[in-house]
Structures are given as C-alpha cells and as structure tokens.
Length: 267
Length: 262
Image (cartoon, rainbow over all chains, first blue to last red; front, side, top):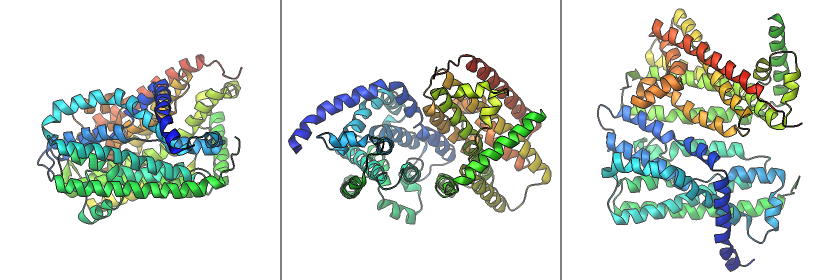
C-alpha cells in the first residue's frame, strides 16, 4: 500500500483504537492508579526538603515537579511491547502482516489512541491539583510551552520506539518481556521519574545526557517547570529529536531482520 | 494437623523438583529481580547524599527498612504470588474444581501449591543490605533484637499473605485479576521507605488501611533495638485481624465459585 493510502487509513485506525481503549476503561483506571509512584516520591522528597531546600527544589517546586511528572507519564506512555510479545508467540502477528497497513503503524495508532482515554480519566484531577498547589511554579513563557509540546511528542516517540525495538526482539528470542523489565528498571531511575536528574552526581548526569531515558520523561517536566532558559531548552530538544531518529533507525534494523525469522507458529 | 505438615512437605518437594528443571530461570528471573532491587535503591543513595537524616532515620537505619522490604518482596515473588497466580488461572479455566474436590482445605492447597525459588533471589540482596546497613551504623544487632525482628517479620508475612489472599478472593467475583496485583505492587512500593516519611492522609492510609508501616518499619525498628511493646502488640493484632478477614472473605468467595468449565 502506498504511503498516501496508509496515511489516509490513520484516522479510522485511531477511531478503532479509541473504542478499544474505551471498552477496557475499568482496566485502564487500574493502570493509571498503578502509575502513582511520583506521588509517593513526592511525599519522600518533601520529607527530605522539610528542613531546607535541595538544590533549586523547595517544597513547592517538588510538588510542581512530581505532579508534572505524573501528567507527563500519562501523556507519553506506551505498552505495545506486551502486545507484540503476545502476538509473536501466538502467531497473530501473521494477520497483521497480511493487512496492507504496516504492522508497526497499526501498533503505533492503537498505542496513540489509548492516550486520550487515559488522559480523560487521569488528567482533570492532576491538572486541577497542579493549578491549585503549584500553579506559580509552572513556566509562563509561551515559547517554553511550545518547546514542551515538541518535547512531549518526542518523548512519546522515544517510548514507542523502545517498545518497538524490544518488541521486535521477541522475533529472535522466545519472549522479550524480561528485557523490557530491565529497560523499565533503568527508565524509572534514570529518567527523573523518582529522582530529579539534577540531583544525581555529576558523572552520572553526563551519562544520562547520552541515554534516552531522560528525554522520555525528565525533559518535558523540566521544561514546564521552567528549569531551562531558551538556549538550553533548544539544545536539549535537538538532542531529544536526534535520539528519536537513532531509536527509529534501530527499530527499522531490528524489524527487518526479525520479521524474516517470523514463522507464525500457532497462527 | 500432622497430615497437613506432611502435605506441606510434599507440596514443597514437588515445587522444588519442578523448579530444579528450570534452573536457567535463575539467570533470567533471579538476576532481573536483583537488578530491579539494585536500581530501586539508587534513590536512597541520592536522598542520603543530600541529608544525613530523613524524617528521623539515618542512612544505616533506613537501609534496614529497605532490607525488610526486599526480603518481603522475595517472599512475595517466590512463595506467595506463584500459588496465587495459579488459583486465578484455575478459576478462569474452571480447573479449580479439582482443588475443591480434594479432601483437604482448599486455601491451604492453593497457598502451598507452587514455589518459585529463583524469584526469591532477592533474599541475597536483603542480606547484603542488612550487612551494609550495620556496617554504616558501626555495630551489630543483639540476639534478642534479631529474635524480635524475626517475630515481627513473621507478622508482616502473615499480613502480606492475607492481603494477597483478599485480592485473590476478588477473582471469584471479577475474573480478570492480574491488574489488581500490579495495583497492589504500586502501593506496596511505598513500604520501601520508613513510615515516618509519610504525613497526613498517606500516613493514615499506610498505617490502618494497608499496614505498610507494620510490614517493614516495625521489623526494622526491632532489629535496631527500638521497638516498643505497643508496636509489637499492634503488629500481632494486625496480623490476626487481616488473616481472619481474608479467611472469612475466602470462605464466602469459594461459595460463589460456579466452575467456568461446566
């Protein structure tokens, strides 16, 4: 199928994805509650900052940081790796390969369609809380908000690419869920999800700059809480989008190699 | 009673024999559990890099709490969760019939049905955490403290088991339960930190609703020789109460089982 036809199919696929996500809304709610780790970390860091601020973080800044983190996590999530693993194992990937739309595009749209449903369930409360408790801490600079929007898109694409790349590994090994577990462990720690990246020792931060994790969560949060000036924001955004390009390069490589090995057992 | 002791022994032996067939799992399951734990400890180092004490706990003392959390997680992953996962599957497929047909208590049978020792690899990490914590404190625990901590840890294990049993009982009402265990995992994660970190609503929630404080902070205090009789009594009462509750709910729940297969 031509690129144009694929693009024209996207809105319909998105609509299907939204209905699917709506059908499982109760399950979705459970998933949202299970992403409340930033709130626990907020309680912890708040206890640490009770006597004196840590770096630029006083109590209010911490509230803004971790509530923003909760919001950003809802906006940039993707869990397509579990689906890919399942479909490779039971052979249903074969059905997707028969369709005229590229399987990865189909995965991407179903993953994207989940976000508004999640958002509808989780965001009103989180944004209200952010407004009431930490409104003054968020940036008022429209340019930074524009950068934030770009960073959210980039962050989602990196998360998606990571899911794709690890999902494609399932074509080589029996199941790549364990690999994803290991990736997630690093993601939680190094992305700023539980510790703001600024609080890490210098040498570790230098390493984090070159890893994808910070660009998945930390960067958008830093932008919306006004941690960077324009020049810094631009440099970080460039790095983020370079990371997007690299990650999708990896995906293209692994997919092409992997799909040749696919034997559709059980399909 | 002797019946049950020999039955327990038998179930454990079969489970272990089964696990020995999958020794390679030690590498994937065990090492990933340890990897998770090690990365999860990073924030502790960062936090204590900023302050010598947090909410009244020094680094060495907080390591005890994390140690008990890790130990409890090992028990959960290695001994409690595998059996429970099996029940949920049996309920969905209808093979739970075979469990009910057996002449022994169903709760006992499902709880002891499966052990995955490789998932309990975190016992090693917990040991390392205790050792490192005491080396930071520059002393060792007294024998009495170890005994007290062991008793409180037993209470913690009973509470954890009962909470888990409660969520499994829900599987008789809503069949798709695997998400619920994720939810519990997310809440349980807060037990990694000393309970005094949490204030206000969270403090009430983690003491009375999901007694995380009892599960990790109390044993840690006992090991440090700071436990009070009140806390010990509270832990014992919480263990008895949650166990009785989970037992009652389980009894009611199996009454509702309708066997999916028939």
